[in-house]
Image (tube, rainbow over all chains, first blue to last red):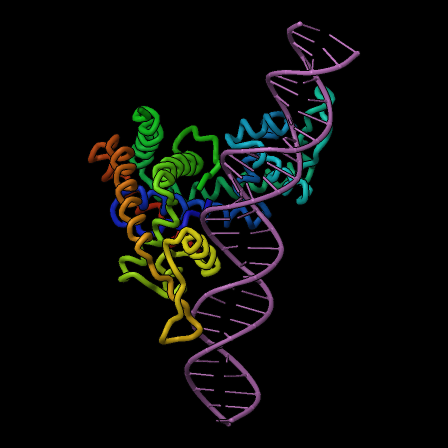
Length: 149
Length: 149
DNA sequence: ATGGCTTTCTTCATACGCGTATTATAGTCC
DNA sequence: GGACTATAATACGCGTATGAAGAAAGCCAT
């Protein structure tokens, strides 16, 4: 992401976005040490969980983003040698993103980096904090939908 | 912004980033109705609070982002007619971003839209929730710094 | 005063997200 | 079988973020 939303005082939207931006920056910094970014790690994660390959459209769906975005993300992963594009034998319209060996390796390292970052950040929270946070996140994400007149 | 960080289960980093992305999307949607975005509103805010104008470097500092970013943001605000660039009488290296009348008007509307979005989102939270969130945000943003070895 | 650092802004390359064409392939219906 | 529609990937334009490198202006010290 990279929010830029500075301001913060109080616990309003801006404070939340600022904190999220800081968290993301922190995690991304850890990941960049192994040549990854959060979007790249997420893509590798979906591919590996799916058994090593997916049509780009499927990948887009699992990443909850638009197709054109995945096209570009896979371009970058391809340039990094972490995935390759191969024809889909079942549907000639479709192309498969396939994780390479280097991709699996990067995923291993990236996952460890991510877990470590998570421990650093969330280790500062008590278990009640974590529980509150889960509730708050739930409320915030559903608030928009219900007030969606 | 648009984080793309899908996954979410539990209250880990990914869930937090996902929620923040959703919140940002929501606020941005409200702002786009008045022709603004969060970065643009933030820039207008800093300029107006500073009395109507700032050198670009100062603006970058107050937005907590890099200069090149502000150059482009001011380009867009300029194109929108919300800000103009004027020479700094005190230092010819420097250029001032100056809010226009249209800029002040947009700021008024944008602020109202932002406040309304805030009410919608945070209205779903109890006052204990808000208090917890403030604490959590504080802990998360300082955790990184203290474990910064 | 001139030569050398610093500061200010801009430009360029890159990454990531969105939406909207456009193109190729598949499936369907007359 | 040929036209229509649905779907997959891509191309393109744009907003927002970063960082590196350049140009112009100021400052300082010899």
